Image 1: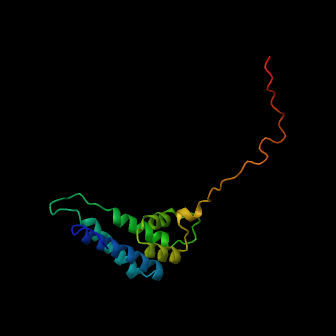
Image 2: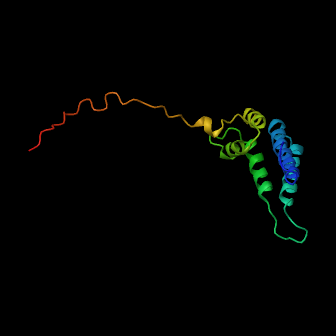
Image 3: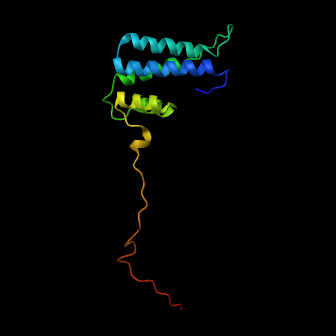
Length: 133
């Protein structure tokens, strides 16, 4: 991890959160879910100052949604899991999580467009007349 020194603690905490989510996806254990929520609370508190009353709760909300989505693997379109997979930078972690939850990444689901040649596009149409009046 080659992050600047001021960002390293945040990057390590984010990595710990992602690994905790992976662990919960493998075990489905309530203790692992609580660990995810605990780390999420710590991440939300990182930017808060001592006298600030405003609470940032992105990671706690995201964790709750992710844990609920992990427990519902049969959903045909699980956007929460796909978004988490797409936002995970570490390719090894992304592949492991994808394998555990059995969800295809978004880019793999979209059909690729292939260049098609338009053979016979004009077949059956009357020939154009080039005569001028």
